[in-house]
Length: 254
Image (cartoon, rainbow, N blue to C red):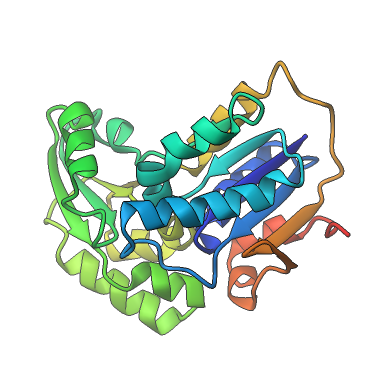
């Protein structure tokens, strides 16, 4: 089994690590866009172009499925990616975990990038899945960039800023950017008592369900890293997170 993931940067590590835990044998192809990130400020058309470039680079390695491990790309590019690649290559998107977070009511905060916060897409998800919960949207300027750089001081500052703007008594926090999932411990410490809801585990489970009938058998646990289509390696920042260490524990592809 070979699974590709795309993102602007290292936010894809959360889903990659979830897949590694479920299927240690799976070969992974990690396709990102360090030359073009961040994607949040880009127009929908530009995001789609960048996501397509990452997807095409990954598709050349003949994966069994492609995970769009990025909320922004899932919003703007998923339909285009599916139109080009399916049915030959299943494409799985990422959706913020608003529904499970709101299931018990209470106060739910959605931490997301400034570009996503207040967007029509996020407001529609709140309307469809927010239920009886009181939902607050919390923009997290600079957090994804700090995570990408592995800048611990900047991460702490951005998390503290978002926590200060999160309503008192919040019972659940939706991690609305895949980058945030790899600093969930820092977020949990800043908002004690709130349950955190990410998308990585659900996405990994969905991938394996989609491939249950077409599984080509065990892989060898290799990992291939593509930066703007060029064979590369995980950055030092990526390797500094537990998810990066887990993903890189496999034998690198040659």
